[in-house]
Length: 175
Image (tube, rainbow, N blue to C red):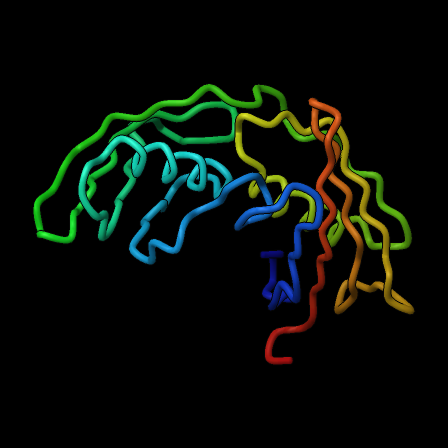
């Protein structure tokens, strides 16, 4: 979240446009044992689907490891250790080339810049790397959006002409 611990909770991220778990055409299935440490969450969703599709047998867990200095929305490569229900394991190589550019500067309406930028960074991380983000608009929907608390509507526009609508909220730690 946001520096200094001021932002304690994401109140709601409810994708409305593209459907599926995670809000982007598919998302991670009900598989509980997925470890995507070091991967953008949108990449985790896509890779989990790909790895599960290529394995015969019931998948119990998947542990992804990035072999690059950093796996980003622009690129990633590594291995996936797949554990099946019978205890056997399978190792799969994976890689992707995604959205090469940085996320665009968000348009912030009635929301402090720091909170707007934090919301944009967090929500763009949820977009699969195969989707190019070309616009972000974040508008306060609360009576007042401050550094301490608020709620905003988020519209992320993608390169294919589609968009994703979300709600993003923040409040002080311990609230």
